[in-house]
Image (cartoon, rainbow, N blue to C red; front, side):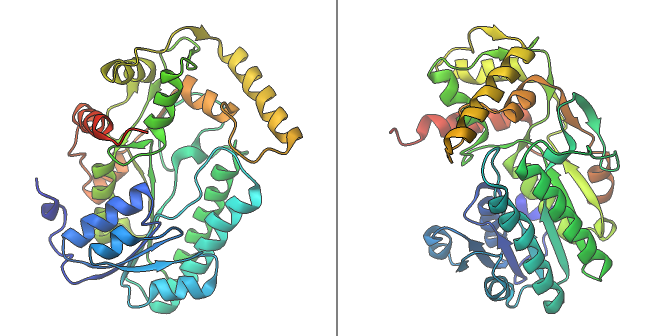
Length: 340
C-alpha cells in the first residue's frame, strides 16, 4: 500500500504540524508535504530542512499566544506533536511546553474554526509502577504519575477534552515507544549504554513491550484527521506485536556489534540505585538527566502493552511496517549515521 493510499485527499489542504523539528512531527510534516498538503511546520529549533523542502516554518514557543496564532494562520487541520518529553527536569518547564502550549494552541484553533485537531499524547500516563498488559483507552489512569512529563501530558489531554466539549473537533492519540530512522531517544539511549557496558538485564527479563514504527504512527495520525468516527476519541497506537523486551534489545545490540547486555540486576536493586542517583542529582542541583531513573527502570523491567482494537475499528488503522522490517530499517540507518 502506498502513502497516498492511506488518504488520497491531502493535496492542497492547509495543515499545521507543531513540533516539526522533532521525530514524529518531522516525519509527519514531510509525509504531508509529499502528499501535496500546504504545510506550516512549527518548532522551537531552526527549521532550515523544512523550509528547504518548501514548507512554511514558524519558529517559537507555542505557550506564547502570538506564536500559536501565527502558526495557526490559514490551517484547516492541526497536528499537535510538540512536547517536552524527558524523564527528568523542572516541572515548570514541562508544564509550559505541554500544558500552556496546548492551551494556547487549542484556543487559537477554536478561533480559527479548524476542521480537526489531532493531539499526540502518550501512553506513559497509563503506567505508574505496575506491570500492565493490553491497556485500553477507557481503563482507569493511575492516581499518580511517575514523571513530570506524564503528569503534564495528562493535563494536556484534559485541555484537549475541554476544547472538544467547547466545540473543537479533536482526536487524542497515544503512540507507544516510537522508533525508526531519525529516532534520537529510544534505541539510541539503550545502545549507548550497551556500548559502554553499563546496561544490565533488570528483573527476570521476560517482560513484554509494545513498540511502534514511525511510519505506522504517521499513518495513524493521517487516519485520525479524517475518520468521522474518531472525533472526540482517544486511541492507542502500536505495531500490534508485543515482544519480550530484553531478547529484542539483545538482538539489536548484537546485530550492531555491541553484543547483548551483560549481567543481571533485580528490580528492587535497580530501583534503589536509581533512587539514590536521582537524590544525588537533586541535592547537587544538577539539571542534566541522570544516567538512570526509577521511571526508566520500571519501563525496562515491567510489562507495558496496549490494546489497539479501537484504532483498528474507528480509524481503519492497520500497521503496514512490521516490527522486523522496522528494525531492519532502523539498523540500516544506524550503520549509515555519521560517526562522532
